[in-house]
Structure formats: structure tokens, C-alpha cells
Length: 201
Ligand SMILES: [Zn+2]
Image 1 (cartoon, rainbow, N blue to C red):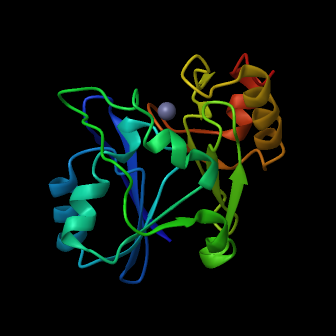
Image 2: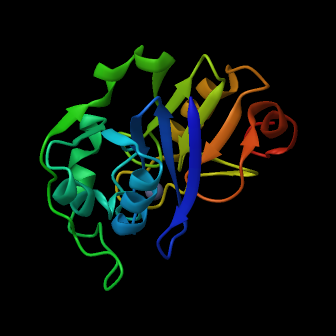
């Protein structure tokens, strides 16, 4: 697996492009569809899937732009977060306008096993939060569930702290040398977070 992560939009979401040969998956295209598309084209990659860790506006803003360019591009996510996608408060004008319901939404669990993917259900930040573990590479895309030194906020609609802490317990079972790419901020690894993150100690 090749991977490249860029920060997109005013909320600086970590958007990752994962690829195997010329097949690419785009994780959390939060904004800047043109920039993401240009990166894919420059690397001669074919986008096969958009993968969302959750439905918050800052993680989904480039979905319409990418689907305008590649109309068959499916959006994989947890069905529990579809209502977050279209929640009236799920926008931040003028940078992030409501995107409406994207075409071609599929349950991300149907991708389990492809390229070694283990989708891990991690609700708490949102009701349908997901983390994506690639077991062959020991890479975790942790969305807004786990950050370097912190965890996701739970005061937004559908958030729940006790549920989030259960999800964190699940992530603690991953190998210590698992690289973590959070939804925002610095990369880390599970062992370092178990040693230093107050929410994991
Ligand atoms: Zn979020």
C-alpha cells in the first residue's frame, strides 16, 4: 500500500490517498476537491472508493466535487452516520455548505478484507464513527475518535463520552507498533498513545 496524507480545508482534516497499483481509495476528502483530483491525476491513480470515518462536514466537503468528476465513485461509510451527513447543523458556512445526501452510499463493512482492511466500529464522536485498520501494514486511520494526545469531542449532536471511551478500549487492543493517522493533527502510534495519552492510560 502506498499512502499520502494532505491537510485540506480550514479545519485541516487529514485526507489520505491510499493506493495499490493504480487503484486509489480516498479517505475523508474534507475539502479542496480540485487539489485532491489533481494529486490523483498526477500520480495516474484511478479513484475506486471514497471512505469516510464519519459524517461531519469537515470530513466530507469534497465528496460532491469528486463525484462530479468521477460519477461512479461510491461513498463507503457506516450507515449509522448517514443521518449526521444531512443533519441541519452539519455545515459551517461559508467554507462548508451542506452537501446533501451523496449518490451511491454503501456500507463500508462490505470492504472488509479488501487490501487487508478491518473496519472497526468506533461510535462516540458520532453514532456511526469508524476507524480503518490495515492489518498487513499496521496502519490505523482513526478519524476523530483518537488523536495524538487526545480523543474526539463528544459535545456535538449524537456524541457520547461513555461510548467513545468504549471505542478507545477497542483501539488499545491493536499492536503497539500500529501507525495512527488521526482525522486532524499529528500522526502517532498506539504504543505512544497508551504511554502518554491521558484518555488511554
Ligand atoms: Zn468530526
